Length: 311
Image (cartoon, rainbow, N blue to C red; front, side):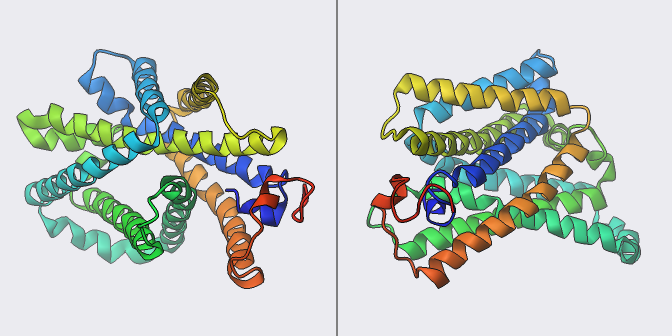
């Protein structure tokens, strides 16, 4: 986020940052819609109530901050992996793989749809970049660059690939489960009397992801304002109000999009390609080819420095 000031200028970097903030808010709205039905199954609330509970939980964890986010993430890595394996096992055991045959035979007719799906998968992975920047910026000095790369890289690749593969498998072998409004609720039904626990774990997992949406949106927002006003610190009240405002916008978007989630999320992923590919190309080419990693850090905070206000 800060490095982009070398390519776009100290103030000009606010333009791609504003687009990133919008990305976070759209993803946050999507998370609310994904988990809305599962929350309703757990609690006696309507759609609006479920979204508000989800928003408050996200806000409180994000406000406590970076250390809590890391601790929750470490625990949920193992909890989510166990839940994933259990769901995959139950889907395959109870459905049987014979349903894959006809679908595979017909797949040749879906070339454009396959390319679209591949594009959206790439957009999902590329949009992970800003999260990595925010999640890893305060790591201890004894954490090497290679460890940071492999942990974030494999986390993105395995997390995305495995869950997308599971989604495709569910659609193929258990279409009755897949063709429901709330997939999380239908998958939790596989656990029988343990369904509430499975639903709770799903909610916690999505809350953790949404915390990163809000935390990163906040960091980008403050980065823009710090360049405009020369701020070095923000008060706890200012932090809370900024986060609350961002979460309110995301919740409003989810309320407006809740009846057309599939189309909404598809459009969001497609839009990511137009934003993230050129921005990443400019950022990486500048770092590795043009400047070879050499920057004047002080001038990244000075609109009158060598990078100027706009580039």
